[in-house]
Image (cartoon, one colour):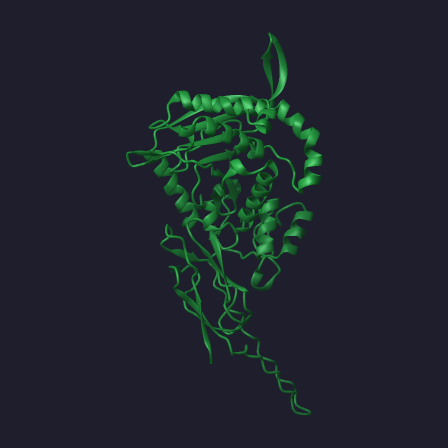
Length: 425
């Protein structure tokens, strides 16, 4: 027997511990090298732990939901072992009735009460389509991609699901690897007994809560607003969008223009790109902009580094990459670390206006919103223009209203005359 330890990968210095989600293999099952055995959730990202060797999973040291630290042994693999094969039943003696074969016991699966299990591809598709299922047709009731596609074609959630959930109650939405309420809390359910279900926060959600409270408690947050006529930007995108996509292999979105406009303002007013360290103001000579991205596990803010040196195509490609990684839980800790300024786009969800919260230790954040046709007065005439409201929250301890307001005006002017972004004037 040759034993190979499965260890927790190295976590970042700011992450003390993590939580095991759900083992994808059971003791005694065969594994292949680099096969994903389990996912580990930190307060920033979800990490995959691959098998360091082929063989048999000899022992699971830490169960689902266990708390672990960097380098801790969580399982052991026998690299020379083979999975036990089930012996075939012996034929009955001539003339004697065949004995009924014993029914094999159902495989042991650790499942939190009421938490249906979705295969990764199924969870991904449910997140994209909004389809919810209480149980699937896979092994041990696992929800498969085929189950989600079938439910989508039939018009959404399966009433009752495979487990016979009472008709009229919405099925429980599934996020792979996270504890879920055992009952639905829809309007109908609330009228019958007022049920409740207590579910612990995930590490990521708890970390988000901690950082938001930290931001509110330590920053003197003030928000300034302005409005942008998006017509020139929309015209440029319409004129060059198709050629841009053919040339660079990615669609030309609005976010790259917002990023470039933010850089123009940060260059002009460096304090917007600064941070507080004790009694010192740290001015950053580089531009690392965080882009807030929603994921099934919560909000994450990956960083576009040295964005002043990136082209529009570079920015669009990186943002697209971050979106896919966030959806699949693949963003690395390194991609979430640092940042000198952030941009949050509530407009993708239909937000008209908001006051974004600063992401510490940064000192400012830009919030962009939905572009809507509005009645505007130009030269004494009422005209219809596609308008977007901008909001910039800033730390009033180091940023005065003058710099904040003029910084936002700089962004507005750059967006309303996008050729200035190309000429850097």
